[in-house]
Length: 198
Image 1 (cartoon, rainbow, N blue to C red):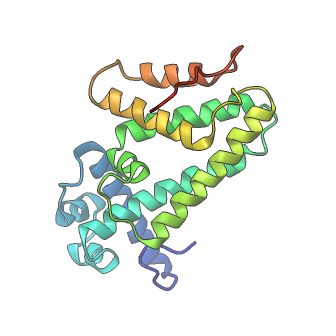
Image 2 (image 1 turned 135 degrees about the vertical axis):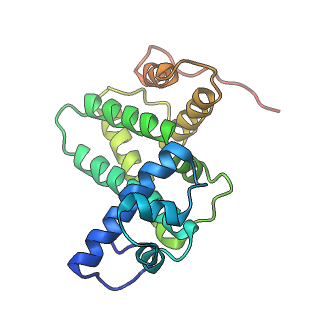
Image 3 (image 1 turned 90 degrees about the vertical axis):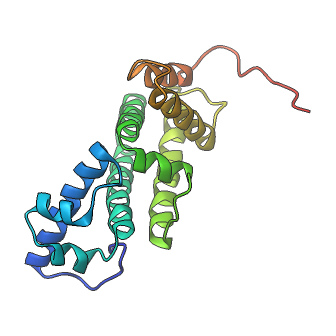
């Protein structure tokens, strides 16, 4: 897939510079939030401010490029996980990684939840690809009796986002909510309690 800007393929040196900027931005946004300036990101990447502005005209464009890059990596990993023999172990390993990374990357949490983030068509497409592949991974794990069958991918995503919100609010120790999510998804006798919502 092409990058968020939709530009033509880059020369090797320009591609390397772009990757350095993305890496610096990824670390800066994860550690300090989106308040880091483009000039500071250029300094950390070891390139001139003009290089950053050439590839990413605004901080919003850079922010989204970082998120898209991360979503693509997760989608590729989920696709590869579909071929695993021990699909149950692979499913929970992948789920824990998603929870752990989103827990420290507020940008990813916001994008997955749609919390006031304006997304380009490219980002929506990559996020949709990840959701679709995750749903396939969940279905395979359910067919292998590794995950309870009375939940769907949308419900799992909602549970994960709720757990992340709780951890970010300091309700539980880091990792505690992720462990509870995984435990709740393992097969149990019986099914979910049905509530009559008026």
